Length: 66
Image 1 (tube, rainbow, N blue to C red):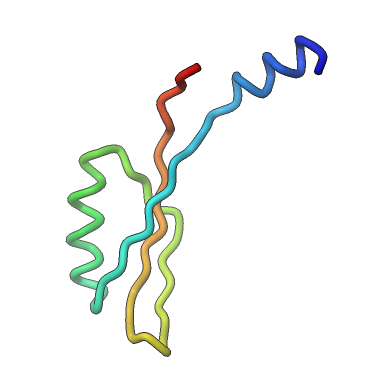
Image 2 (tube, rainbow, N blue to C red; image 1 turned 60 degrees about the horizontal axis):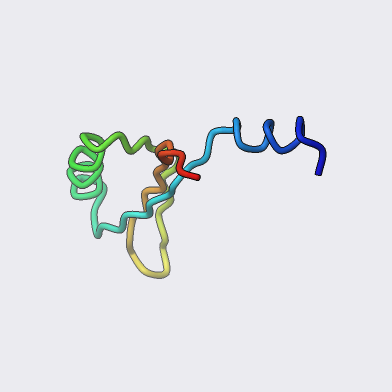
């Protein structure tokens, strides 16, 4: 791989992801407040009718390590 391509790949932001589940929107909101203090950012919320559960999908920057 050319060196400039390798440098570009390593310079791109890496993310880690988290999925939260809760039986009600209010309790999902409470969970998101807690993890928000740890730099998690909400990406999407989905309600599953079959499971009667709310899912929150979050991301935050991954600390780069070699």
